[in-house]
Amino acid sequence: MLSSNGFAYRDHTLDDEMTIAEMRRLRGHERGIPVILINGVVSVGFDRHRLKHSLGLF
Image (tube, rainbow, N blue to C red; front, side):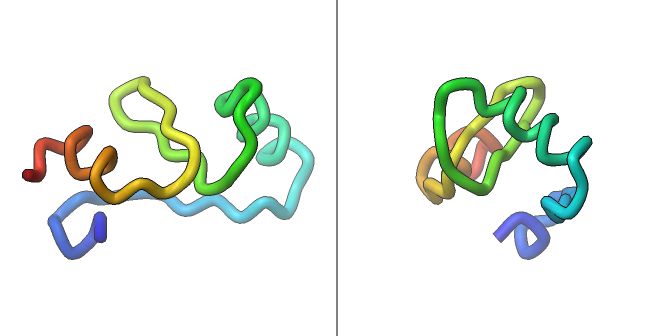
């Protein structure tokens, strides 16, 4: 969805302890994947409507 709407993104694989620790820090008490960071705002889990709203796509 991101690339088809012209947004660049970085995909991180949870294959090392540093990446895992950073994802845990970002998501706080919430559990789930993906962890999406847009303009400093963290979103946990894939919610198409919330993601579109965050990106200004309606």
